Amino acid sequence: MTLPSRVRVVEVGPRDGLQNEKQPIATDIKVELIHRLAEAGVTYIEAGSFVNPKWIPQMAGSEEVFQQIRRDPGVTYAALTPNLQGYQRAIASGVSEVAIFAAASEAFSQQNINCSVAESIERFAPVMTAAANDNVRVRGYVSCVVGCPYEGEVATGKVADVARQLFDMGCYEVSMGDTIGVGTPASVSAMLEATLEYIPAAQLAVHLHDTYGQALANIYASMQLGIATIDSSVAGLGGCPYAKGASGNVASEDVIYLLNGLGIEHGIDLDKLIAAGNFISRELGKDSNSKVARARLK
Ligand code: HMG
Ligand code: MG
Image (cartoon, rainbow, N blue to C red; front, side, top):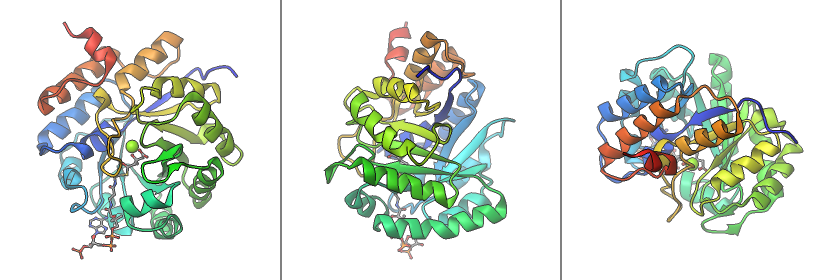
């Protein structure tokens, strides 16, 4: 199959990246990161999360972040909402759209959102109803689509089934998360092929953590299957609070470099994106996890 001519990049750094940082991060730093990403041409920014702040303290300030960000035209400012309570907080904060998140593995579902996979789907039903009434689009995530930190390998049939349920409930897109970054082009392709039985490629995204350094190869394999929406995290920020040892998402800068090399359109200015990643890395007092950003350091 030929590669897509244009790719939509979903920037998850301000949420998936920062949720995992141990040190407190001031709201104005988060706000500046989001502004810099929009200035770089990023059109979809997951800017926060309306979960229980006791579980994810780093996202406790999401209300303030949404109050303070400038809304650039053409940019979607999204947030995670695990239940109706989170959805209501998100709407009161003026989010552009929300995302619900389920897992393909029972043990991860219990650890992450304190309920079984089936219960999580039931919990999302009132969110979908409220969102339909409010005309708010809902994105769906499936975690542990290749492997689970507690259960090991996850069957492709189970992954496809959970993705199908989110899609059938009305998610306009389902993002397939290799939460612990164990996939290879072979296992990611097999998982996507099973899911493509139910969901068209245009409504699937990949969300690949880079723990084993396979994310870019997995993205290439996904694009060969027609996937044209890629989640990534500036400076490769992040990990997963419920998946010990998992590293951040694939770095956005590295994805853009790959797309540039392949002549695939994306609308993002690589230099400005690198500057945004260097800004947050400096603020966090750590080196960027983006190889491209490191190569460009003078
Ligand atoms: P629970 O404890 O089962 O919920 O948590 P509950 O309904 O029994 O409520 C317990 C308490 O939580 C109550 O407070 C509620 O008010 C409060 P109390 O009476 O004890 O003071 N509560 C809330 N507070 C604020 N906002 C809310 C909310 N909901 C309940 N929305 C829940 C269930 C899902 C809320 C909890 O387990 C939770 O917040 N988990 C957070 C999980 C999370 O954020 N994980 C990281 C994001 S997922 C991810 O990173 C994967 C992804 O990137 C894809 C990939 O890589 O695979 C998306
Ligand atoms: Mg993630």
